[in-house]
Length: 446
Image 1 (cartoon, one colour):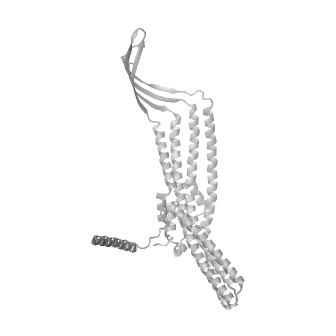
Image 2 (cartoon, helix red, strand yellow):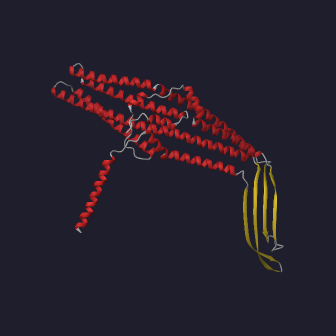
Image 3 (cartoon, helix red, strand yellow):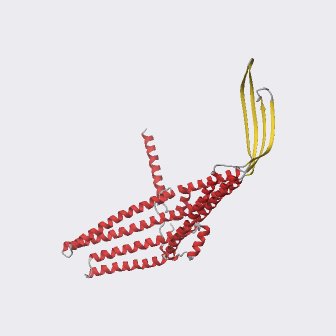
């Protein structure tokens, strides 16, 4: 028993050792880049899956609209056990049966033709909605990814500022103990440290929220990201186009515009369908019937009846229902038309906003980069002046805070520039995958 126990223990130790060796060989988890996150969201995002199901449902409606124009064939059969009672005659019991095969082929029904066109427009609207959600997904993934990168970078800046403020507080306390400092400097340094600590906690919460947001989109844990490559970023510049070109592209390709145009066309067809309520309908009918013992006077007889012909229905009066339906459809078309115009105006405003973010982004980044360099030089000068006795410790802390704010604004400007580029492509109906690939190329390769 002891030998068996030792053998089992050795096997367990060997397995544990091999597992540890596997972890060592595997190394740290590889960073997920923006393109991988986008591809994961395409498969896992619940909104995209819901819209795809809606596209499938609209496709089935198109199938149903086509099927309504095909012949309708029905078969029915019945069997009954009958009991016939007559005065002064014994009761009779006999079976009866009926078998019918019928066919109806629509020849003229205006509403069916309009239904087919309307189903095609509804399918086009669903396709446009899917394209719109795919564009929105590219923006949501990019925004979450860059927000997480910014939060991580800002947290690093806050930690550096916290270290500098802690060092300044220790220096202020030593100066006070040596008789060369003031209590005010200690209190101010302590207040700055408390504020930086609170900001650090808030930044950690923002980082965690951005991480959760990205994890929700791709439905998998997010450990590390590929950071922005500064050299690639500085060398990259998007193609320059005028705002009018972006607006024209949006009018032609924007999923929002295409969705509203399809909805407007469907509303116009709804008017034609409502007006078809005043029109007659014509169907071709064919029927074959085999019945037995259906006549109480001659039980046991069997009849076979064949018929073919046309059926015409002419609506005469419906209490004003058709006219009311037409007026309702006209009002709905007017509403949809106004919504299309509102979408155009709102889209134009958003395109102008994102266009300014893309066109003026490099200028803002350059100005903030110069401000960060100046703030860094100010920190060096303040420290030298403090050593020379012409500046105070608070001047150094103020310079450190100004440097941190400049670096924070610079990081934010870079990420806002990139997200504006992706948003502009999405709003104008551009290739969302291509815009994601452009931004992903600016990240550091593992």
